[in-house]
Length: 246
Image (cartoon, helix red, strand yellow):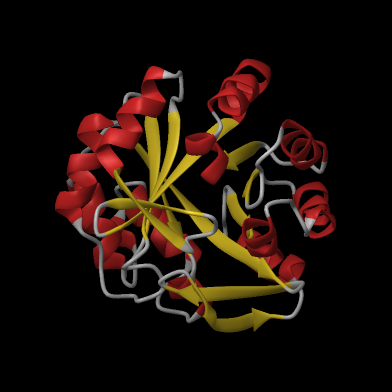
């Protein structure tokens, strides 16, 4: 598994939200590039970047930051936030994204999803973000009545093979992961997925490793790294199965 340090960009700064609430935001770095560079210097193999302004407005707003991160740091970057049209997806890839993460539009616009999958295939990831087991949309601002497992099955039927699953209730809380929930999601994913939400300690990463789910390809971590709960290198060692060295 790979540890994906998360960089959420809002108003040009690297921030973290609590449970997806835009009115509960902490600024950690004035320059997202510096946040990204610190994770790469600490041993990150991949970066997870979300354009929160794009998620709110529906179109990417921070491509210049993404382009600099992707071009100058030498590690692959997956990018999400506001990618709701084929031109927006194309712009993110041209800015240097290795993978694009679709959210709202993947559920609401079937033609768009089919078009992006046909054009970019393995570079497409769909984010399934859930509150209380139901999918949220529009930058986590609206909760639907769609159960997350049913949505994953529906997306799989359309050809999606890569997912990000986020527990919004746990996001930014540092309160631990729901291992049983991750196990349930792993049972319905036909492909690979990344998990996000609640990671606060190395023990949380160990709990995910202990599930031994071959389709769980990585863990996205934000606040715990920004607040120094553990180092990138130690987290990656745990995910590599070498936690006795951490």
